[in-house]
Length: 347
Image (cartoon, rainbow, N blue to C red):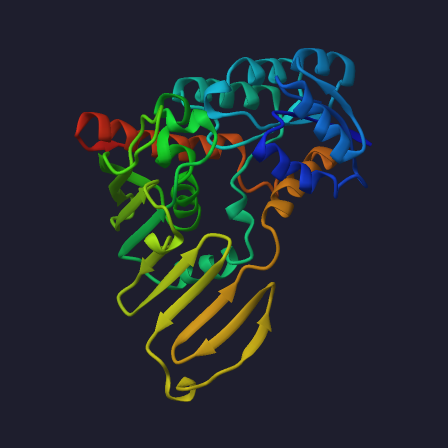
């Protein structure tokens, strides 16, 4: 049985632990590391297994894990990845993979050299609404993409400092940028405007709201709006709209996918619900709705674990090398905000 360890026992680590405890048929939860010893021990208690550490190198020495989940804040990447690669340990890392593109390019190159299995926490790629989204992209020519994600300021203190978190675009809305890349097309050019002044909070130094214009390589255009100014869910409707000339689709990440088109005569006032494939399908007056089923994080984590166990990484939808492109996409937006100029995307 393969041994699994975890570095970083905070909120996102707990999200993955909830999944990992369901996989003890194929893995042993052997070690948990956090700078706060009580947090590491709490993970051992929840898992009913493993040993708590405050030094990840000591954990590696004693546990000798086959795989590790790296669940640390964006500014903490560096030594952990280099040591993990040096020891030949397969790893799953939370997004964003770092705040330094050159560093992440080096990691991607070293991973390739060592032939390590990697995955990144873009669980949205594993949602049951992804398949019908792909079908829509394949069957229609998309002209315009409009996306949004608006929320509040996360409670962790490091998030408020853009130098440590990357800001709303890089730390949170990277999920939207990533799923647009995954479903639709790669970006060619971005131009981002940011603004501040609506969030009143101590030790806060990041953008309250931003708007990004995108040109895709296939010629289509996009606009993505995001912010952390909201105090209530009624503030904004977060979604991605893919617009063709005669219909549109609305993708709400790991929630729903709706196709809006002109109603056919035999569909007017039709109500009902049928099951198709792995998602719910409802029809009413030219609207087809698919609902997310289950927690997309479970297949995301399970796919990585099974890849390490089998040695076959072909089913992983977000390997490190590809996730790096989503980092480059979002960091280009930050660069555009800082310079006031368009930025060409170069992978």
